Length: 470
Image (cartoon, rainbow, N blue to C red; front, side, top):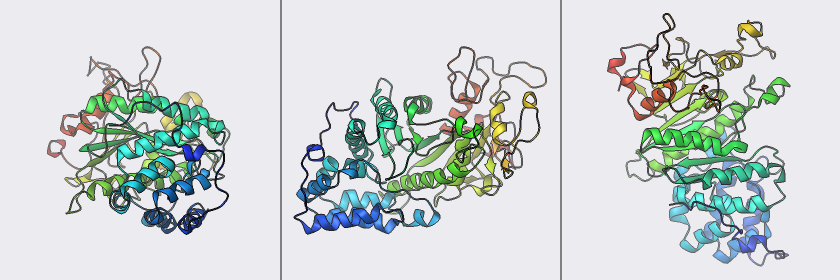
């Protein structure tokens, strides 16, 4: 069970000591430093990362401590993440991480790694959730007190706040903490799970869109908490594992604009890596290699674009995916739902989508301006070709987020509310986002994530009668 708070002092005495050894007395430490340099290079490969991590198997606990003292940047910068199809094949996956941590390292080595190299341990896929959590808590304390990431100290503090709020049901786990590689200037990234993803039979990744970030990580975890509270025994991961576009970047026509696919492409490799590693780490626990977990994705806004990129790169199908207020799926990524690596039932993939009538901003992301902004197409880059996943051509199960009958204006769900905006939650009274309590959208999403799909009143169903759906 993870600790609920953060220690007031960074416990890694060797790392914060003012006087580090001027040189290494151990050939194993020298070899580790050589492999670390290779793993941190701009052109580092998955083999370089694996070789660096595996070398700790040859080191004594004292050597690991000495390496950390000589290389304090190892707790200030992360190892590189996969950024191509080739990387996804070569990077140490969840099964590799399980074997490395549980079988290849002895108790003294594991303790030394956790105590002296927490940022490394906490971000290796396949390391147990409670171990990742404790390591990332330790690493976080050091990052918070360092000037290395002073520009993003508020983000780091908000990650602490999001993990520390333990009043609700479900333990919280800081699964990853990514402050970037040397020279990389972006916000810190993080994953926080409500519930233990190592034990839950169902794990849902909640993926945000434009303007999201660790500057509001407590809000991201609030969304995960809402889903956790409504779905029962699932673990729900607030996946802030990519750097989404912002409105400022979009209106200034920056390369990070929501109208471009750059951030979706970059984040898609990261999410694909996380999803496959979760599957593989769970499958490694069984002799037949079968995973005992249903992995689901709930994505919003630009996060649907990024998720589509990820789900064309995974080796393993996810159980299901739900898109809310999509800014559009690039046709060169997925022309329809069948292009996504999602489990198929009765000939159709479990892909679900919704968009509220009041959500005009989602349409702008697809190049469709509302009438009060002049109407017509909006494509300043001349390269946008995105499909609305609620369009019948995409082939998703489409459900409504509006309670009123479009023809007669009568309420079909008198105890629920319509979504009134593009957001996932709204602070104003009488306004509602897709994940606000009391909305038809959250009620329906909860049914889907629970596997109660047959209870949903769909607007459109691809290919067959919904009564046959399981």
